[in-house]
Amino acid sequence: MACSITNGRVLPCKSAVGGLKNIYFSNYDSAVAALAPSAGEITFSGSEEFYQYEIKGNSSLETAINSSRENGTTFYESTLSATFTFLDKATQEEIKLLAAGRPQVVIEDYNGNFFLVGKEHGAEVTGGSIATGAAMGDLSGFTLTLTAQETAPPFFCAAAPAEATYTPIDPTA
Image 1: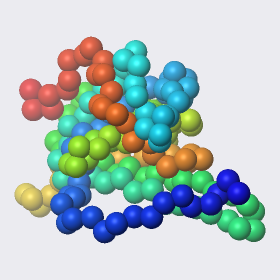
Image 2: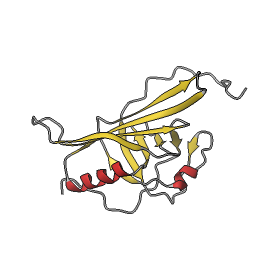
Image 3: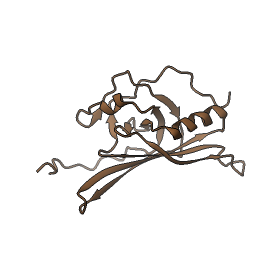
């Protein structure tokens, strides 16, 4: 039977940490969708263009497994919650483009893992906010929620994708 388990798992040491370090966005590209995973891992060809967004704190990636015995279906829904501190016009313009498109997204965590979200169908911006904050310690910045539904969970990537040639936004400049 094709759905038989093939291995067990030991209890690892307590050395992992949570949190996301960087998010890399790419315009939806059929070349990324066509990349074939080898042993569950994606290796980028180098021709893909990704744009790096540095983040720190208050961002997360969660993937829900949705399986129905009645319908005979299983799919994975990944939800990326991202916070970009500091309000600026250039970032707002890029967020408008992200919201209109369906980017493919690579997430880098603090354990050195890279995950490709939205490989086949892209990710959709399903929510977010532009906030000025009320108190001195409140967020003045952007939040985004992106959701991707795929037939497989996010693929591990062998390394970070090659970044596109661009000058990154400096919101404080």
